[in-house]
Length: 247
Image (cartoon, rainbow, N blue to C red; front, side, top):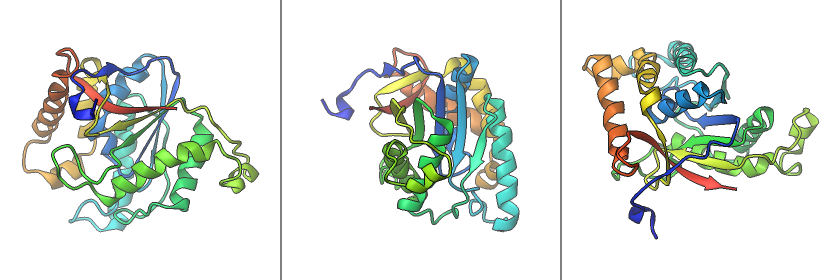
């Protein structure tokens, strides 16, 4: 059965305590899956965020030196709305993130630090489900995250991490891809949807540069439409969809 033939999405596993989300930019998670994050933290689970960049090239009207710190502040405030207090930035340059050993090493180090059972990332494929082109940063970080899960458990790939006190960790059980065109699982968005709206609204500077719509109207319409579309494959329940890889 191909991904396009799957008619119903399965509930995401819930027998875990700690998750790590790894994405390229501020707002990637808020556009993708913060309603699910809110539901998880409500249930007592720990979720931490790692961002490859500070999103400093994301607003045309702001130079990177001004934009980067502003977007970092907005991301921390956004994460707090859905119960996430741990937010790290890896310092890669926005817009030109390169897939390769350096990125894999940085993400593997984060996995060793946080020791999650579930790792989240964003669509790593060249296109989105509607055929539009994905950005190079999303592709690089998504692919590197998939690879870094294995790297984190192998002491010989990046031996310098062990020398720094980061012992190998092979305890990741699943990798979940948000924004995938091949979803397999989903999380009920209802309990966390309002906080997902307010979480995305914390990226106000970016949103106001992106659209002339009222920010709250834009954000609520976007998230409501997206989760409602997933409901068709999740028993009529608005949901956040993921492609889940088990290990």
